[in-house]
Image (cartoon, rainbow, N blue to C red; front, side):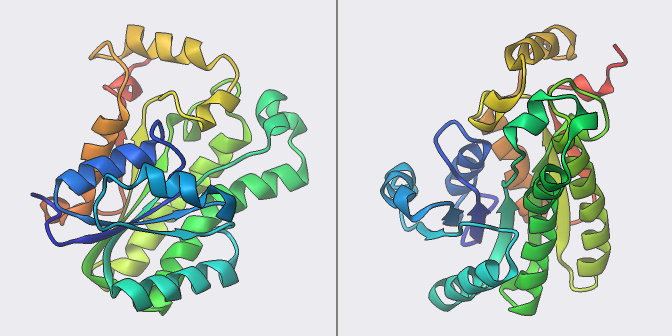
Length: 257
């Protein structure tokens, strides 16, 4: 098992259709002890029911991963109750609905800031607080989630594409900063998956159809497959990989048309 006796924090789990859930399932099946953060105290019962299959796991509410004080409080509690951890998965992103539905040129200043704060800055903050609190074990691995809309124009992705571009650039800078301490930082660019977040993207089903037609493997990726790629990046099997964006999209990213 790739993650035997490893403690992995997964941030942003929402439901059994989420990519975070697929990652949790793969990590657990590979021996990891799981820790989760989620939004909203009112969701505690739902989240606890969702993760009960991952025996021994714990969950903590974190309402805003872009707020320094809140992240520090939660990470302090996690360290106190669990000791140091071996990996963090950042599965957090959000943009206002109107900024996804309208043309990008109409993005408001507030909407632009919100998308970048929640989707990109939060990962930088998580890395910084983890370093400051010394919560990471030696050779720890940080993994975040991105999408091809960071490098290509996709209708309906708009400001989220800009935020994901910032996130991917942050991965490279964080990899350089934390590499001095043996900590690796990477991103997984997953193909389109029917998640709750994906419902906010206009004509999302047509994207699934196009990927199935054009991708070399002629199918869409699953949350379980993205989970396996993430488990690899969290494990010692990938100890020579850092600062990278790894595509898990059945090859769609290589196609020109």
